[in-house]
Length: 212
Image 1 (tube, rainbow, N blue to C red):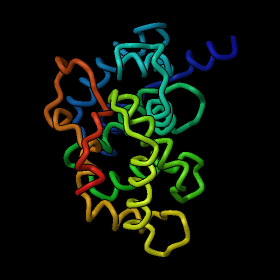
Image 2 (image 1 turned 135 degrees about the vertical axis):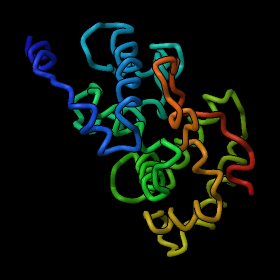
Image 3 (image 1 turned 180 degrees about the vertical axis):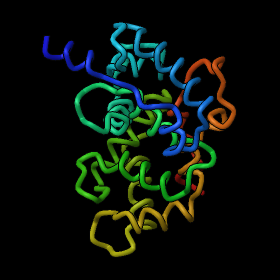
């Protein structure tokens, strides 16, 4: 009952307010609301996107729980209450807009890797993310190759040599390897209309991402 009451109290912000705070115009915010309604009612029509509905939107499968989808959901769920409200949905998607600043994309990607939220990317976090990307891409690499990728990444990125990557080191690293940020831009968001069918935040890992 408590959860239902919370849902009933939800009031969506004026499209003009969200437009002023994001890279979308009012018409695009309204179009995103149509998409939000489809996603939030795909399993339960409650005006909120659950983790299962989020995964259904990403993978067409509500049962496919992955490390990456869990982490992206956590970042979208800025209130950390287990569901995504419309305002959270719009503000988070705005980071993926082609006109969003590089700094915003760098920060979001860093947070995605910083799973323990310590302010640093640790070696085990990078390994877990690489393994998750390989699994979603249905690719298989030996443990030695995975370890060599991690070694190369830390050799390039951990310029302070303290065994972890901070936000400045991450920024410098993705400056040298810009393809690492390619999934942070969804071109279709620039021309979104009510016909916009869905969204995909995760693309297949490519060999040149870490081996440029």
